[in-house]
Amino acid sequence: MGFLGRSRYERSGFLLYGEAVKAARHPHFYAELGAPDTLDGRFDLIGLHAFLLIERLRHDAEPGPLLAQAVFDAMFSDMDINLRELGVGDLSVGKRVRAMWEAFHGRSAAYGAALRDADAPGLEAALARNVWRGVEPPAGAPTALGAHARKLFAHLKELPLRALAEGRVAFPPPARDSR
Image 1 (tube, rainbow, N blue to C red):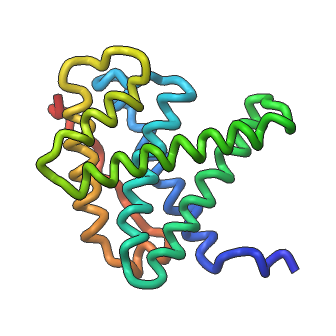
Image 2 (image 1 turned 180 degrees about the vertical axis):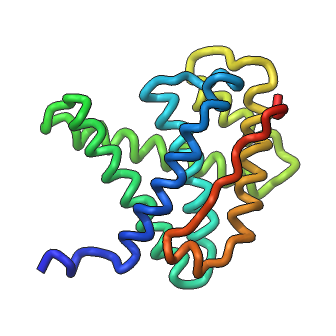
């Protein structure tokens, strides 16, 4: 009876999320843009890529919102598993995942507002505040990451919903001369 609680798009959600993770792990973000290669830094880059995918899907016709939810569910299932693998105790995992969930929603609100106003510098400021949390980002890095995020979002909007429903997505790599 376990299948009753599962979305018919669960597999697609995990496939799409896996591609977002793969894109977020591109060495360019860490080596060239100086994103911290830490648990927090990786969370922020994964969150950015997942957000872009979810944002594209949630405003689409069905099954877009269902796919968006499946990607979100896959992300936080993965966060739960990763925390456990890192040795976080069972009693603390729920609290940590909830904090990550809240952080993701806050970032999503900021990134979404900035994407709706293409001329606003809000995306770059939000990325600087979140990705390089507490440290000064390298010169031009938030601008380069913001430009890349906008490029990804435009690319994702062009993808057929059918391909996404099948769990197929490709994130273009960041431009080498993006800074």
